[in-house]
Length: 336
Image (cartoon, rainbow, N blue to C red; front, side, top):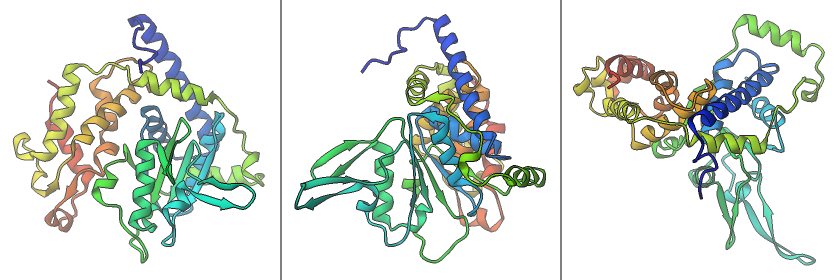
């Protein structure tokens, strides 16, 4: 299928980049009216949506993850949202749906909660592996099979999956191959004190989430158009080479003189290269450009790499942070 923006002139591409970039900023400002003090999280979630990817969010309960996904649904007209609470007794059919029988209807399809535009997959690491796999496959393919029928999920489709950083009983950690499917891994931290004071003031007269001044600023078709346009944002050969070098540095750190290279057990997979390009295109749109610059790569490399570089035992024992390794890579890999 031909992309609707494939034949635009340079001038038309620049105009569209400006238009779509403004839409993303409008969404960001509207969400931040209610979701206080988590600017980086909001920004990275929106970039993931523009890129057509999904986000794994790590943070303790009670920081507003459900409210964030609900607010997204209210900011984008024509969309809905669902929160799926994962538990050890969940079955795949509880997520995707089931073929059922009723004397009046006969056999019929009962669709599951995954049939929504914005999904909060809450505490996904509490679900057994078979359920995790069903969720992640649906997230990747944007379609599910129920009985002998295949159903496409609504577009746009975005999943914000959460896991608790604290090791607890009854959890099934996501395998590295499954974590690799997420465009970003993002950390949601406690709000700063000044922001928590704003939250207190804001909620003093709020009785219900509907009382927040949140209204649509874009439509579902706008999001689909932005995602289509994102695919046409230019990534030059030099930028592609830069991306490949950054990924290669995580695999062969000795070739780049990395200070912390000895602490890397596993480097990034080829999916990191693909996702770094996708995220950089989204970041270019956010900055109202139709082409990627090196600063786009550097701005989003951390959430793309952080769940794809694994430390060895010595690195963990030394207290090395993956963020330090990523910064070390950025500092030592030049743009060609």
